[in-house]
Length: 253
Image 1 (cartoon, rainbow, N blue to C red):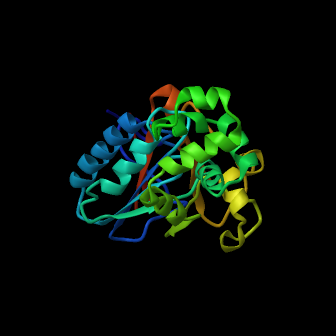
Image 2: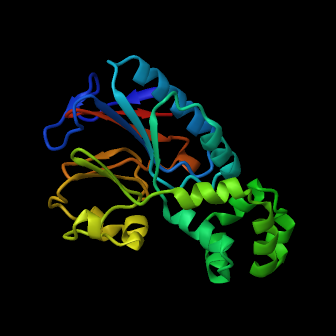
Image 3: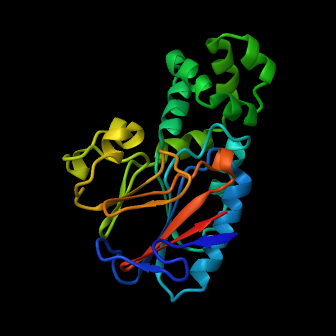
């Protein structure tokens, strides 16, 4: 496990443009995409990092896209449901991949076709749907097989995921926000799917936006946003940001 820092490579970076209220600490984790191995490694590192700092009310935020592309989407959800969070608050943000997962469970065959093109096949196979069925059958037969394999506990978990979390001067979302629109008036579609219009915007959002969704080789720690999707499913690097007061630091596998 290596530890990365915004700004200085030797110590936590102090930033004056956003803050976490006194007595609180937040860790946010980028897109997991079915990599249970990296998720458990990073969560264990967060446990050690949190224990090594002064006592605080700690919140762990997962920024969505827990599923698809990697091989263990079902196992990722199992782990998050069963994990001992040691009394800390946990917030799950819904990503665009969870959105399409739920649409498939609701019987939307157009969503199923789309999902199969963006990594849904790997999720289905993690639940036991045969690869041969996915390769040869139509979306209806695939969806019917898959739907029967998803535990109700997983459905409830996915449905309970939120759209945003605001802590002090930070707003946690999956993809980003539409510039110029107040956070409490954002549309779920933008929160889960937006890309260039958000990434290219250089003005203030009224809060520092912490997000995943858009892959970068390194953390993007900017004045108005922090992007922490480092392409874990392909790169092997799953990243988290730690936030406390005006400080931010990074952990990565």
